[in-house]
Length: 264
Image (cartoon, rainbow, N blue to C red; front, top):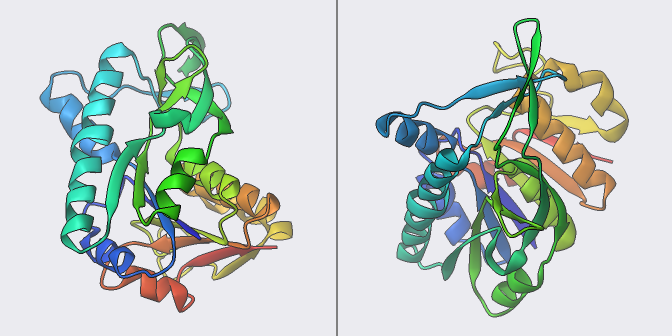
């Protein structure tokens, strides 16, 4: 069993979809749609509002209108275009959100403390949250019967409200719940880099005991991906790849050792 994550930063991932469609082993595909969401929100006259938490983490403030846009971009256009392409390539793909069948249940955090300059403010009405439990029954049913699940946020809260959750953490939680052998996270970078301005500075292997010492090389999303990868390995995944989704045959190159691999 493989779990594959397509990062929302990738704009051309057709080669990756061709590789996925050619796989003979069971796979669950998870994707984001950040760029699609940003473009849609701008077109609809409500540009993305990015905020910084007290801990310095940057995230999207997801009010109710933004959640509507989120569903359009993630569960609508991006999910169904991926399903369309995979089915055209012969894969028996079916599109889902992490709400469907209660796949990912989480806690909504409606009040968000953010820093604006030197001031701390509380924003109300946020529709973001954290995953607390994965219910893998629906994914297992689909995979066992020959389907290729294509999964995307949002998750569902205990109160039955859609919540924006981190896609890399969703992929990690799904991989652990399904007892996948490997988790492959594809983005628009060649791997985890020692120097973010130098694509030749990729670290090919990072052991768990090295994660803390190298995590600060990564900024923003790169650091989040590394920490999610490390958590997946600690919880039983054999190896997690932080991989380049650009160019020809990205999955083949990953199997040949390209990118960064996080292992015990």
